[in-house]
Amino acid sequence: MAIWTKIITLFRGAAHEAGTAVVDANAMRILDQEVRDAQNALLRSRDDLAKIMAQRKIANDKLNDKKAKQVEYSNYIREALARDNRGLAQEVATKLATIEADIATEAKIIGEYDNSISKLQASSRQAETVITRLKQQIDTVKATESVQRAQAALAAQHAGTGAKLGTALDSLERIKQRQTERAAQLEVADEMAKATGEDTDLQRRLAQAGIVPGESSAESILARFETPAPKALGHDGVPQLDHIAAASKTS
Amino acid sequence: MNTPWTTESLHEALHSDKTVDLEGIELSLIGGVDAIIHITMHEHGDLAMHMAVSGEQIFVSSPLCLASQVKDRNAFNEACLRLNPVNPLSNLGLQDVGGEDLYIVFGELSSRSPLNAVVEEIHALADNTIQAAEAFADHLK
Image (tube, rainbow over all chains, first blue to last red; front, side, top):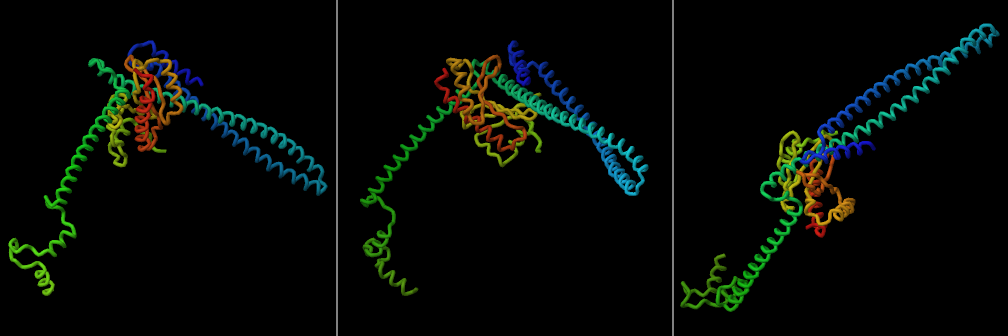
């Protein structure tokens, strides 16, 4: 396709110039103009198509009229012959001959119209495809160019600082660095968790040994009720079992 | 048929549509005659990508590496051409940026694409770029 050649030529033209402009703005305008011309040509051929289709319709109407006449006159001839009026039949037959000649001519013209119509339709479709592709190519070139200009602007910002334009390589480096940091953080967190774990274990053993108060378990609670509290320590000196008995009586 | 996006309307929609998930994606519109959207991918090592809409197309581009970072250009070019067909949704390309050759990973989609397809393209492009950078490690300085 010639489109590719055109696009490549656009780039080739720009390759001579240093700097950021990739596509010669002038060449781009020419290409835009070409698309517009092609679109105008397409509109014109669609007009032609509409005209030919109208003419075909008129020709076809005429043909149908003649065909109706043909049937009508044939009936007249049959009728005249049935009534033995050969002279009248002859006269009608002369007219029918003209009508049949006209029918042949009209049919031929319509066939030619049909031919032109299908040719025009095919070339319109083709032109449409070409225009669509060309427009897509132009869109791509324009979009690419805007992005390229933006990247060039970024590169220019870096130029003064001596830093290079940031690429995926820098990002990859950053990702790896962040992963290392995250791994280190996880390690620290892990160690802290382990240290807390060791503490917990010590606490548990201290509680088991009865050195520090442990968690209340069903057994320890029951033990509290079953073992009478030493009198010296109790506030009221009432044994707990009695206390419970008193409570159950009132309920 | 729905209306095609423009760079501005796409940026606006990405910002205001609450149904799109922009986790880790930072967007900013850089105006001008031909506006572009600057994208920073925080979960992809702050990869800087650019997006622009023109007519029927959305173009998203991501910088892979500078030609000056490549050890052997011929070998790298061949590796790129071989990787390209198996790289889903994205293409590899070469562009002149500010007088320096830049290898890019890019994607194109219709400017009538739904918003979530655009976001998916952004994610896919960032993933592909980082993966390409990893895959090409041996070719790079």
